[in-house]
Length: 101
Image 1 (cartoon, rainbow, N blue to C red):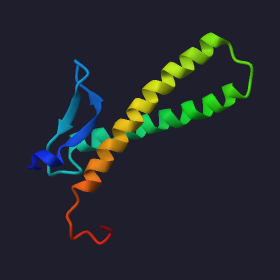
Image 2: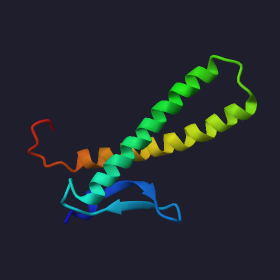
Image 3: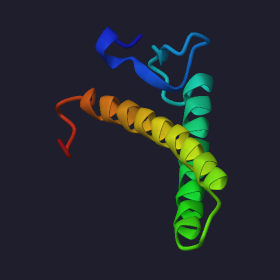
C-alpha cells in the first residue's frame, strides 16, 4: 500500500464535501482507472465551457446566461484545480531515481 503522503486525491468529494483519497499500489486498478476517466471528463467539460465563454463574451449575452456560465465555470475551475493538485502530488511522490527529476 502507499504511504500516507502518497494518497491520491480523487476527482470527487464525499457527501459532506470533504476530499476523498485513494490508497493503492495499483495505478491501473479499477478505482485508479475510474478516477483517470472522471478527470478526463472534467477537463473536457472545462475546455468546452472555456470555448463557450469565449463565444459568449464576444456577443451581447443576457445577464442570466452569463450568471449561469459563471456558475458552471466556477465548478469546472474547482474540478480542474483538484485534478492539478492530485497530479502534482503524484509527481512529487515519484521515486527520486526517476530520470526526469
